[in-house]
Length: 141
Image 1 (cartoon, helix red, strand yellow):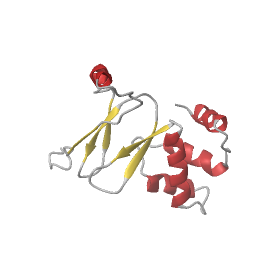
Image 2 (image 1 turned 90 degrees about the vertical axis):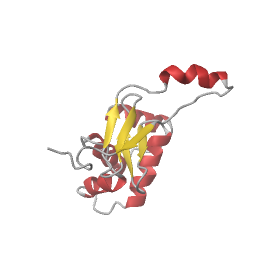
Image 3 (image 1 turned 45 degrees about the vertical axis):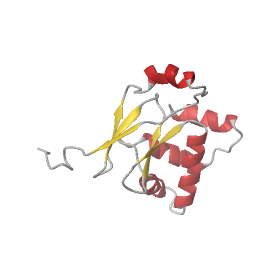
Image 4 (image 1 turned 135 degrees about the vertical axis):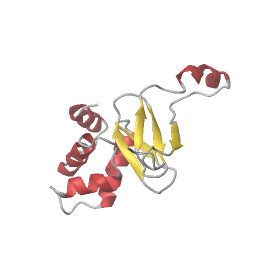
C-alpha cells in the first residue's frame, strides 16, 4: 500500500491529514523491517520534536483500524511491530531479538472452508509463529 492510498483511506473515513500523521506514515514506509512504535517515534521526532508516543500509538491504531497497517504482536515483550499492509501474509517471530520475518503465503487459506462450516463468518485472522533466529541460537556465522 502506498502513501497516497493510505491518505485517501484516511480522508474517506473523515479524518484529517496532519503533518504528524504524514510523518508517521512515512516512517512506516522507510524501515526494512517492521518498526516498533518507539522506532516510529524516533524517526518522526527528527522532523517534529514535540510529537509524543501517545500520538504515535493513536495514529498507528487508527491506521490498523482502517486496514492500512497490521500490528505484529511479539510474545516475549510488551512491544509490537507495525507494518504497512501490502498483501495478506503472516510472520515468523524471534523470541530472542524480536525480528519479524514475513511469510508470503497465508497459512490458513485452505482451512477457511472448515472454519465457515462451524458457522462462523470469518472477517479476518492473524497467524504468528514464534521461535529463535539463528543469531539468538548462537548459530550466526
